[in-house]
Length: 80
Length: 381
Image 1 (spheres, chains in turn brown, orange):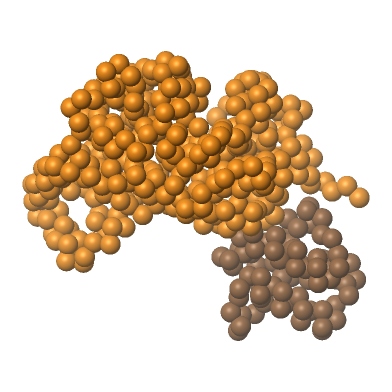
Image 2 (tube, chains in turn purple, blue; image 1 turned 90 degrees about the horizontal axis):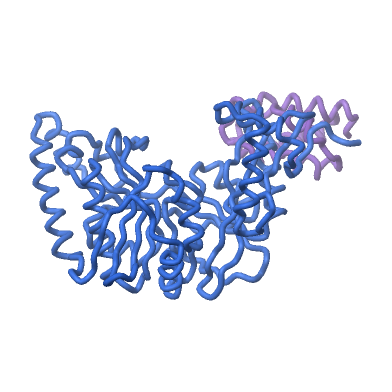
């Protein structure tokens, strides 16, 4: 994953989950973030799909419950 | 590529999967046969689309249901005509899939199937979800409580939990009174004052006869009452004889019915859910009788006061400490105030979504005639 793509992903996660500016986005997990509810999850998936030009299957969306999982998912698809 | 997770409308073919989901989500010994029987009954009683099974959206992984959102048919009055509609009811996701996309997916699937839908929603996350799905949040429906046995209530209630915005000196005084054991006496005194206030400001007229009975009036009488009442309502779920007898007629002795008559003509009705200990932390342990439904012409204040007086007598006779009325309508709220009901901050929000373009719905909640029993919400606070 390029630095630019990673930076964009962090920006999306931070904005969608309304994380504070000094939060370490790379350690973000749904379990630890109260604002990461059902609606935020859908918003996050839509934002990632829009930014990276992909369609994330619902079965995969269910599994993407941390920054690390999302990053790995994008890397496995060689994006970008 | 077809996903292994699909969002679809449930059919009879999913009876086994639905039964397993009901057992996992709500418990009980539901079987495929009881699911099928329930679907057939719901189709036969469907007032919005007669003969059709009310839509249920599910998210399936293989044969396993991960999320569910059901609907209950009803009809809505818009001041001119009655329109078919559905209550969205029972949005549920298996615990291990919560906070993911499942809740949104079932809600969205159901919304696409229902051109006109209503919902009563409590949890903030669910409220955000409904707003995102295109429903309009008309606000929280206010709860009103009429203390009947204040001596008993004063010994148990936490005044700071009631959301009344009471001054600090007053809540502190109540706490001290509870500790030293004089709260009961103080409560009895205040209770007497409330009763006198209700009599002075909300006296029921003597020319109306109220009775507390165990059976609903006939469907024809209820239809006539509804037709007369709706003419002065801007918006309301329909409460005709068919609905009232379907909703409350087969529940054994859970409900009492308060009738108000002008001579022999039925002019007002209330459905009172028998008292039980309230699950609300603010009303801990209090035996609350709930006004599940109430029907009278909003312009007829005399009738409303008579029905409310009848409710209080009925509630006392079955041992209630308090009466709970949830209403949005400005006229009923005024009458409740005259009968010494105390408003509590509401937590049940009313949502409306109508993409049919045929309804004329007021956007202010105070114009809607809503009650606790709508969407079977009389069991929760």
